[in-house]
View 1 (cartoon, rainbow, N blue to C red):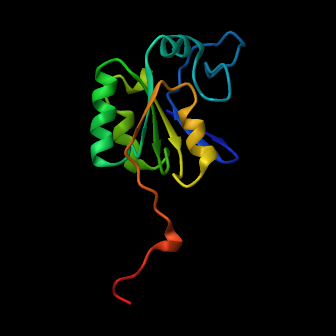
View 2 (view 1 turned 30 degrees about the vertical axis):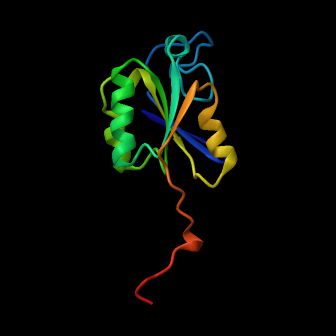
Length: 137
């Protein structure tokens, strides 16, 4: 897996060792981190987005969707965080899972994860840090 960082976006995708049509050594055709042959396979599958994929219920949904042959865009707080490593180890994750860094309060980040999806399972909850109240105080 490789974390591809853009100014406001981090996408984690599997790394391949094959040479792409454009001759890149890492096997990636574009900056989104997906190899050409993998892109073709994902295009023929139903694709859905699961928000909050790092959570308990959403992670089980991701596992089920992958098992049923779906390509899954999954949003997490940080795709490169070791706490999300288990998602990358699910069966068929290498071929069919893309992790997106997405703050649910950031429209552009969420919209990027939705691109190309046929449906969305919204299981995330926004965590507005400035709105948190310390009950002890």
